Image 1: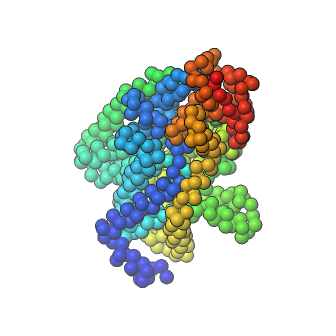
Image 2: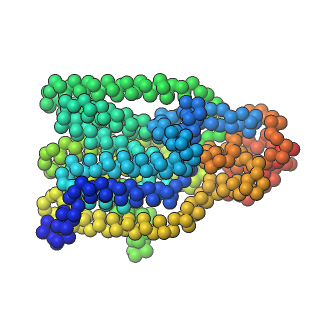
Image 3: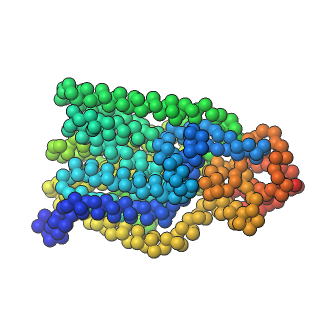
Length: 538
């Protein structure tokens, strides 16, 4: 049914086997992902922080966070440890200069990120599959596969995945053509970008260098050793430049907690927490099916709680992991084996980092969001492992002999997810207006800022004062004045007469409100978990 003689597969082979079709598939993939990015675009969470970094860099040439203090009205540029992942902010700075819009900047970065992502997937897939038609088919499947970071996270995760894939590709090219300096230069650039995009990806430097070092020991080529030395030199120069030009200037600023008495709403304690691993996102089964979609459907059909279905997916993950490792060990075809080994090492390293951090740090408890968070519960931690698994499964379906029933089953799942993704993209595009309207008030942070925006449209002169960093940052990138508490003695005389403040605090932070006369604080609507109060300067 699914053999090479099948009419459908024969049509795909003939129609998808040209470079023009490859460009078209990449374009379709980028457009589809950018549509979802536009429909679900928002600036909450870390996205607002990195965009504020970009704006500060544009104005002061230093990556810093602006913090305005209610006690004296002073705005300070402060150091935030998130500066150790500076590349996204550096890329955003020129777009901010051109557009003067945080939203447009994020959309332009989404376009750039997805372009880098799918061109990298094309390069890697061409090495793995060695057939343009199969590579193009894989790109279309990934184009309409809903990756877990798309609906909430920003382009930063897309950039991290894209640069990782480019690093995998150029590591392979280095092994194949060790005498070309251009390859060495591009490999150094891609590895540097990986580290500068997300700090958690930094250990991948060791993975790439170890893979190359092991290969060099086997081959014993002097010219290759020279290029390897050049690679080390380029990476060292990048590290030194990043430290002295980006990190050191930021570290000279006062730290955030020395200026403001608030925090990011989370508490992290180091220890040993094996129970965190029980909530691991089922990333293996999620690499070929949408586990949330199937979980909901199975809950309705089997009348089994969603939580138990997700446990079942985790059990399936263990079985699939064992099968996939056996598949990789059995696959001996050169030169695919080389790049598969690199992909496997990278995916295993990132998954291992997520497991280690979740095992050694207590789950984060957010004030402004429900539930607990740790690295293994965050699907973004497994983005590269999921892509690696998709490549391996496609390889298994189309390149292996035997296990025909299993291969056909995986093929049908890929086809279903592709068509389901097309349906989802069309449906979301048709309902884009409704979805975007809902997303503006879909969280407590967004509701508070929406209320503030309405108040300013009616009267003007309103500003936010809050103990929640996420709320303050989200207000700033939405064009609203926002202040934090410093915990120091206050003099509110700097405020103009008639100035209005919307105070948004958590119950446990109510002590900071003592700087305001209690009789002048007026209760407003509560937006859980925030308590809203109104104050007017006289």
